[in-house]
Amino acid sequence: MTKKTARAFLLGLLCAVLGAFAAPALAHDTLRSSTPAGNAVVSSLDLIELEFNNNVRYPVVLLHDAAGQRFPSGTPRTRGAKVLVDVDEPLPHGSYTVVWRVVSADGRPLEGEIPFTVGSSSARLPSTLVSSTPVSGVPMSSPVPARTPVSATDEQGGLPAWTWAVMAGLALAGAVALLIRRRRKPAGGDTPS
Image (cartoon, rainbow, N blue to C red):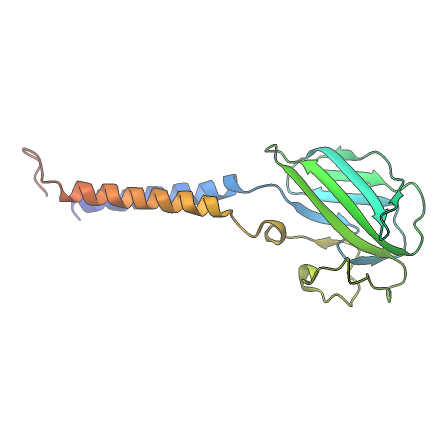
């Protein structure tokens, strides 16, 4: 193996290692799970719990029914990566939505809605609240367990496009620099081994 080949190999290895360590650093905070879970059918609800993959700040959590009427709930409080909110009154049977907004550890606002139903397990959400995609692969007509984890890719869809563009640009720049260096003629006494 020549010195140039060894250098190119080490440069490629260094880029691969740096790229592997950079991917987790580029990930954003997401909602991991909630109680109630999205599209869940529950018999009652005393506490709303949102669990994120990192600590969050400044939580705002609202609870309203299908008609938009807001139901009283306590002040949101954080406990590490969890946001907890007490539900002040028993909820009558029907469809509800938890609307939440927090500030993630990197300062980016996150928000979402969690539709659920209070009632028997045979109750279903109206089609206006149900997305066309099942949550966690569970069909819409079947009741969802009270706590269903939400994967990071459910909300984010993987790394953002700009991340891939930057990594591709860096790889292209490295390849161009390597080609330019290889095409230069050796200067003076620099002879290949």
